[in-house]
Length: 319
Image (cartoon, rainbow, N blue to C red; front, side):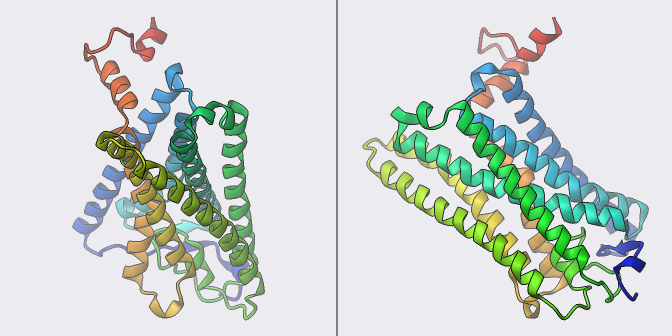
């Protein structure tokens, strides 16, 4: 193919050739996708209906659930459909949509997780000023900034990727259209624009990383000054899962986008991509809901348990 204008479709990474293994891949991704839809959907419904949960922490958690749904819905359904139909095809428009939306949702999620670390810092280190520092207007501005930064990353990556001539075929060595894999198809010898985009992205990520480190250093210092063991346990149970998700997302995402080509292999690239594109959206609801007593109490109430005298908001709305 001489250039990208002659490409009408791309070929995604083929999964195991036997029909049984393809159906196994379909069932596995379907189970993960349904779990992500159910978990994030429950979080969104819970926070939207219960006015007691209209606080900064749950507002950010609502945005995180929306981003998780967007990220996993951008990549997994197409991969499942290809396995079910025994094909590798994805249209040029569909590939461009994945290149745009996936960095948008993942980048916005990283910036939002950074914002959530600030929320935890204020709640633990400056609890008396919590309502002042995190008022409704401030929360809206912080969430909007996270979505805007994700949009900026997506626009830069998409414009840079599809402005380069693609003449190395149309086979993408990944289960979705990932930017580094598309760039491997380029025959351009000019890497100035690619370096420019990478510098901007790395600068934003580095600023957030420094902010995360400073926030958690202050949080852990404050937690260690708490005299009771229960106080230590509660604070660490809140912060450590958040830190684990951030570390997984950052380490695997940076490795996928910045690793040298000499250490690249289809199997390694596939594992890394699954770790940052599928695992966080699926496990975030477990991390943030099962360890949260208020969310568990609301869900138990709506499931019919008689441990509370309140009426489930969903039932109340239907009456």
